[in-house]
Image 1 (cartoon, rainbow, N blue to C red):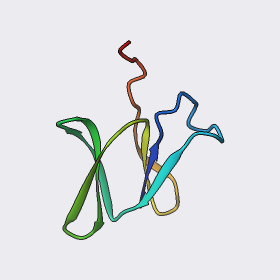
Image 2: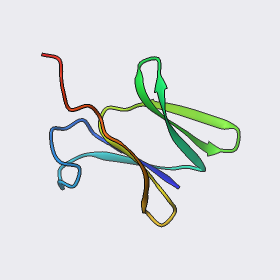
Image 3: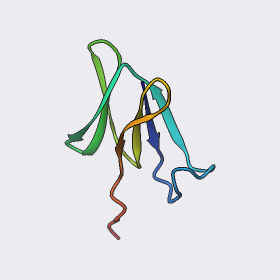
Image 4: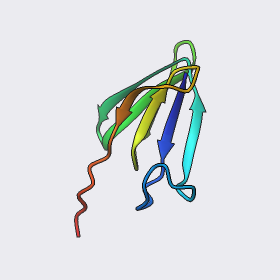
Length: 78
């Protein structure tokens, strides 16, 4: 299983210049954290990490198919 965290760049997720981070995990889920939406993931049994989401995020199965998606709110405070 993988978590794919997209950058907050103002580009479509499929754009070649859009940054992302790919994390191999055992388990993952989206949660509502104190600082906003987060992904919670485990890289070893019993040890969980949290990341606040800056852009869209995807949870992928071991074959790379999307099994869960989080779309960051596109409205911004100015």
